[in-house]
Length: 257
Length: 266
Image 1 (cartoon, each protein chain N blue to C red):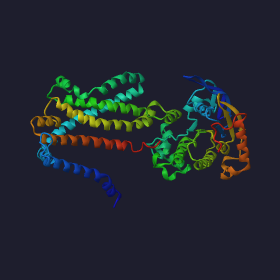
Image 2: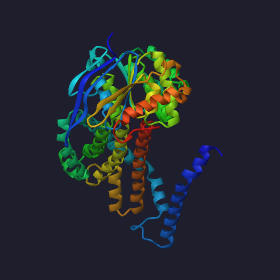
Image 3: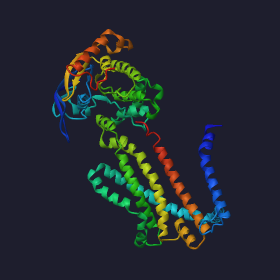
């Protein structure tokens, strides 16, 4: 057996088997235990709804995914920019610190209803803003930590080389910070999706996956609500794996000292 | 001709929360061009501090330091010295060759010339097959060789080394010492070498500067000169002259004090 094939068997197969077993137990429990659909629909019923509604799930996922992505990009750019400023201007860092701590403890989605009235309930903008604010905090904190990773020996070396501030930033400070920035991005990507979905629970246009979950649940279409939840899970997984891949790429050599 | 390094009456006092700590007191030392001088002493004797002052990574509280007749600051800005530390301090996202090229790149050397010089240096430190590897693929000794290649990349007339072999195992260390004598013989650079190993200091040096702590000062300077750098080989370590010099440095080091606090007696 090739190394890739054996890795597939030893690392991929067990969780897949566990997942299949859980689905089977779930299905049997619902059927044999005669569990009512409003409490827990069976996996087969959810699967059936998922297949039937695939086009609308895909469209709604695209709307929510776009909100999350725009929020992720805008929030990350602002987070990195603010971290760079804070790293190089100490006074601003001290001004930012309490503000960031305050933003970090606010449940950002709580802002959604307020933002809908500010920007209009028929637009997606409020959801993008919620995602962007949620993203800003972890990206800022991780980037700032990354920008402070330059080791004393490297600082001494750059001084010995009489390197300019810009040369030091370009050759040492920013490359040392990149893995941390992408770790922040990975953490933020899940937050962006969660925020974009939950923001939809509080109103706004009935376009995204979150709005479909609430309307299906309130219309007693339980299996359908679960099918939309599966769609939301897929959106979350896509964001997570994409940012994880980016992070892996940028941290591939950081173990060395 | 100007001395490579001229240290006159230097004090360095650090102000800490617990009060003033005198790291160096009344230190004077002259290193001739091409001369190999080791600084040895127990922890806290200020040997690394003295090296940092020469490199202008720190400034003396009193006294003066000149490097090839210039102030230490001017010498740093003019890139009169190459430097290596106990930690190799390689940039993990750069290959071996790109790490060696770093100082050349910062000082505006063209791409082709950089590549040529890096290839020479990689061969000089015996890492010919590893030019395209990343630091995390190298052993500690190999990383330290890259750091030395980087330090001599711009052919400095002065090499400052702060325990560059301190983190290596004994066998690698002896091998690296031999390599260093070969490299300094080829480049003709003066070297100021901080160590706490007596045999290392004796094997490498023309003169060994013995320092004592609290406050850090020079206790004695032992003339070793076991022959031209190029002629030194492994057999020197078993030479009677070598043992005699080790004994002289050890006696200078211990003086009237209790033996060997913080000193590597291997």
